[in-house]
Length: 405
Image 1 (cartoon, rainbow, N blue to C red):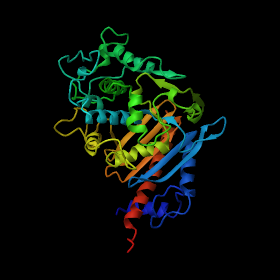
Image 2: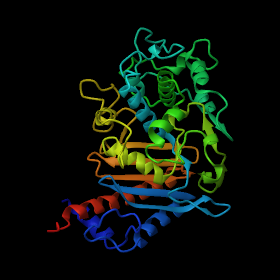
Image 3: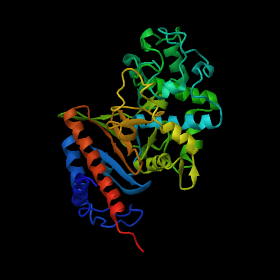
Image 4: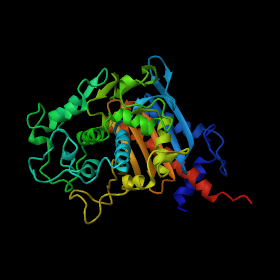
């Protein structure tokens, strides 16, 4: 065992406990939450975060979960693990699960030309004879790019976006569409170059809708939210009780402003609204071969396919270094490919849902505050590191605990 991990155990385990959330006794279990609370609250104040929620998962069980600060600062409403907020691009993993479910039902293929499924054509004008596949969309290698002037219009403040998903996408990809331009594409063949694209993820969601014959929000409810007891999770603002939804904030160096709630025309790229508590059910299912408390949302082979690294030395995009980044299917890597899952960033939103490669330690972290200033964002990342260190220490304590006879 590395000395740094031993130091982490020495620092953390005597300091604080997780009352109400430890699923099984751990040798040397901590006694109070004072030290971890102090670390989190100090960094929250330094970073200007209004509300925060987090959970730690060890061996596919929640071992700690708590909320801090406020979901509504003006009315002093606490941010709790049950507080609902939009989670940004973590929503892409839900689109990924829906895609894999449609594959299981033989309604889609990862490597078929996407034009097989669409009522309009998507053709890269720089390489019109090259097919784009769902695998390309799900690994951000499709050659589709987010033209910022257009993508910004996909956000609608004050409610759900009035433009249907299919209509927005057609206007972007159809040469006669309002938003069409050659600049919507890269001068790169599909699979040859990686550029993160939200609009491509929205297109994948629309393809799923076309293949299964129902909107993605309804399909998700049927195959994910209901089986996993995610009663307050949804895609659209109109589907949720507004009193459960956190307010959103933007913190600049010297100012804090409230951001109106908003919807996305390309909602499959990041429109899911959920809580820390309910997201743990979903993440545990994906860390446990597709099932949670006896409810299966995907077959093990589908989970393996979704999480398998798609880039190899022989087939990687030209601009990728494999020791820095790889990709599953709507399943990301971080920390130099030592952690897997996804993160999310949107106005008033910063989230992480990450596990180590062995899936033994995982952290979920939400804040309802944009931190666009790097000098402030470092405090959010510091909280994430504190949670990760604590989770690793709990895992190590389990490993070194004496076995009962």
